[in-house]
Amino acid sequence: MDNVAFGKTGLQVSRLGFGAAPIGYLKTDRERVGKILNLLLDEGVNVIDTAASYEGSEEEIARAVGHRRDEFVLISKCGGKVPQAQGEAWSAELIRNTVDAALRRLQTDRIDVMLLHSCDLTTLKKGEALGALVEAREAGKIGFAGYSGDNEAAAWAAGHKDVAVIETSVNLVDQINIDLVLPEARKHNVGVLAKRPIANSAWRGLEAFSSFYPHYVKPYWERFQGLRLTPHDLGFQSEQDWAEIALRFTLAQPGVHTAIIGTTNPDNARANIAAANKGPLPAEAVKTIRDAFKHAAAEGWPGLT
Ligand SMILES: NC(=O)c1ccc[n+]([C@@H]2O[C@H](COP(=O)([O-])OP(=O)(O)OC[C@H]3O[C@@H](n4cnc5c(N)ncnc54)[C@H](OP(=O)(O)O)[C@@H]3O)[C@@H](O)[C@H]2O)c1
Image (cartoon, rainbow, N blue to C red; front, side, top):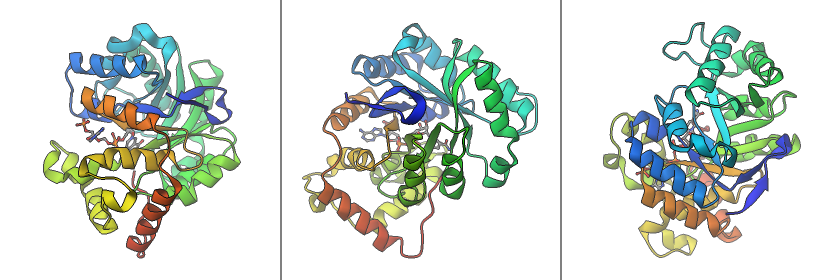
């Protein structure tokens, strides 16, 4: 697995990373989480992204790979109201409490990167939330501060002196941040995690998703229909190739360092490693997908959180 410099952080990150939202929200069983995380680390994936709100995921990560803590860059997110954390959403009090709770739940003495979990631009500009992360950084509890979100808020955050890392949606049906956020991130040498990097595998159709996921995936599924693309248009043979196409499209975007795919399935984790190892999608296929998006999004499709 190729590693790249993670912006100005001095860290090296693998091009494929792991996103813990599905294992948290879907309460994936412990043995399965252990299998997925250990096989990813064995193959050189060294990025794990979690959040206080991905219920139980921090604890499961600690149980599964806490003993391999030196092998991965640990990213978490905070700021929104979560059970058992005192304080108003986006207040310094709540952020302090959530950082301390995350250190306990993750059973570690350091979180490499802590991101504000998608507050709006007005809240971001107020400065209290970001200030609390700076305080945590100065206390040695986190390595770097950053922001996870989309559109104008992410672009603004990418230019802020205290922001070293941005997490933003980049995928074949969510391309606004490619033009709005990635140029700012490159200009300021900010580390970039592409979230929802394979568009939640929306090509599988809404019936493939359980619990709250159909509601969450629906806009992507609708956009995917709107692209009117087939794998054949992109030099691929089969519908089975969509995951590879989607991941390699995201990895082809200048400024994206790592694509954090969420999965509850060890076979998909292995397939994603193989796809990432093939490198970015060829320029011609990237252009076809960019053109299809511009055509379909003529009315404007914002980046989705
Ligand atoms: N606001 C925020 O900060 C925010 C928002 C969204 C996401 N995130 C972060 O970004 C991460 C990634 O986003 P995401 O998990 O929502 O979406 P994603 O990574 O684009 O897609 C995850 C979905 O794709 C499926 N999948 C994975 N590999 C596959 C493969 N090879 N073939 C077919 N299907 C495959 C997974 O199902 P299986 O379980 O069946 O593999 C899962 O349903 C999250 O986990 C989270 O860490 C942050």
